Length: 189
Image (tube, rainbow, N blue to C red; front, side):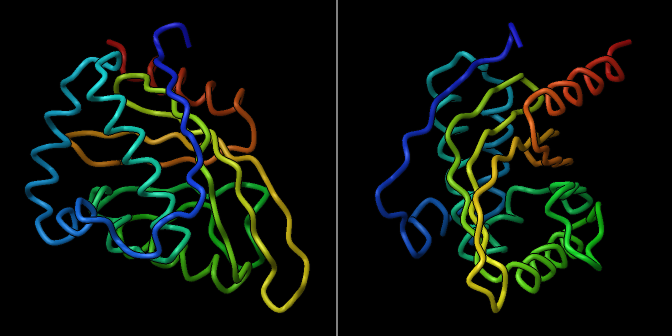
């Protein structure tokens, strides 16, 4: 983690219920977003501009996920991206891995069926250059029950050519860091 750049995320008092102007542009003109994301990818993780846009993208994506705005979420994911769900949050009938945009939509439907209400508040993001790890606090409430609980999640996303190609959720930081190390070792010649 010595090479990672940590950025804290201040929680907003009341997140917007609708898309912001930049989010509307992402959905309406995905090509423009992709060009900007590729430029962002070439910047140093220590760059203030990169840190700002990474933080903004993390907050925007989690807010969109929480309010069910999948078009905005998927605007940041490659068509063949894979998402590995939080292991201890998988309800009966849910898959562990979801592939492509259709798979991520299926995950959202599965989550909605099992949990009903969900919110996630990102607290910090670590930029490793070719991937980022977000630490967040989530809250879910079981559908039809008054039972709700909070959980911590460490989400790691790897991107290529401006889009997320893999997303894995972990229940603890050590597991997430091991996955990052394993991926780095596999990518090294």
